[in-house]
Amino acid sequence: MKILVPIKRVPDPATTIRVLPDGTGIATDNVKWVINPFCEIAIEEALRIKEKQTGEVVLITVGESTWQEQLRTGLAMGADRAILVKTDTALDSLAIARILTKIAGDEKPDLIILGKQAIDDDSNQVGQMLAEMLGWPQATFASKVEIAPEKTSVVREVDGGLETIAFKLPAVITTDLRLNEPRYASLPGIMKARKKELKEIAADSLGVDLAPKLKIKTMAAPPKRQAGRKVASVQELVSVLHTEAKVI
Image 1 (cartoon, helix red, strand yellow):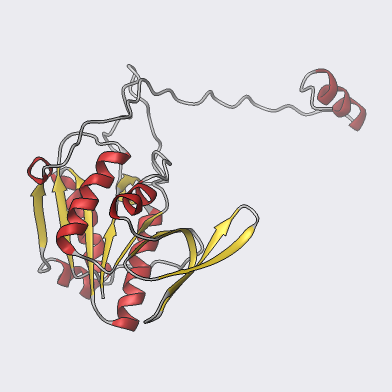
Image 2 (cartoon, helix red, strand yellow):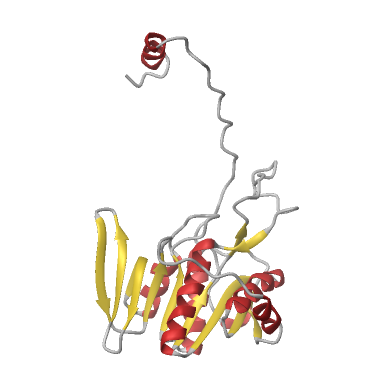
């Protein structure tokens, strides 16, 4: 089984994000970059399926040359090879989905697993767009995946609880938080990752429409939270909630 795992580089959740003064984006100096946490879950699930079924796990990301670092981390976790589609231009979800559709057509994977969303923009769009473009079944927000010869079943998290769906491969699955616990890259894995294939492809050479359909006009930091204050009694608290907060 060949599994394609798209990943994205995002700021470390522990990093303090600063918006540029002109509101055109975030300041990237002194920012630590990591694999999107949901993408790590996707890598882990692909590796577990490979360990049960045998096969190949191929990572792919779309970005600048520096994104190799995150691909190498995924290779150190156990992926077999990686593809970097190089572009210095920020692309929207639709352009990313189009690139992944082209790569999937070349690679012909049996399964594509990716994180349900990235923690930087929270779009939650690429998986659904990709499935539609490929004409494949999709299972989003997966919390359990079972691969069988005749059909694949996925337990997915929905507003009302859990839903189980079944379909035949090839398919697209997006991972939710409770699917698994990603492994750490071991020292032998890090050493092996240096010798694994990491192929670079220019995005412009794919013949894909990369024109953005979505434009971010401006960014702004959220307002600072006001400090709280102590009240002397329950009666005063009720009064403040009624007259000032107007919640009762």
